[in-house]
Image (cartoon, helix red, strand yellow):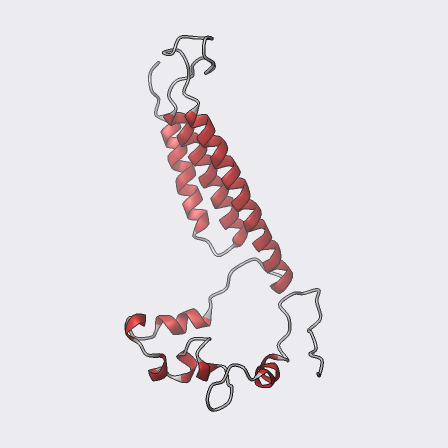
Length: 179
């Protein structure tokens, strides 16, 4: 049996197309790219298994004639992993479509603002020295509590976040009951 160049070229083409689709902003194309990567991995594992042989049952054939069952088990595992991640990506695509009626990830202005900040390492920064809009979300001064930054003040947080609509499309915003 002579080795051919066709299978490695197909595997390389599937990997290239999969990576190209993964780098797109459309979540549907990301899903298709991931599926192509999964299929390319399955072909790579199949081709790494060597030539086909007889069934791996003891006493059925000589050990030299038996095919290796490990690549088949790895391919089955890769299929299950690909299916699970594809289902997760489908759920993300559905959720994105329900929320904003589009499945393309837009440019985030917050990411641009963070990218324009200085190159100071985050471990070297003190949250108290940062500007108010750059402080982490859990920092006491960024929550708008009382002067001491007490997070136990429920009324302040309820007044501040009470008017924000829920991110679930089908659920109405919740109203807080008075005690």
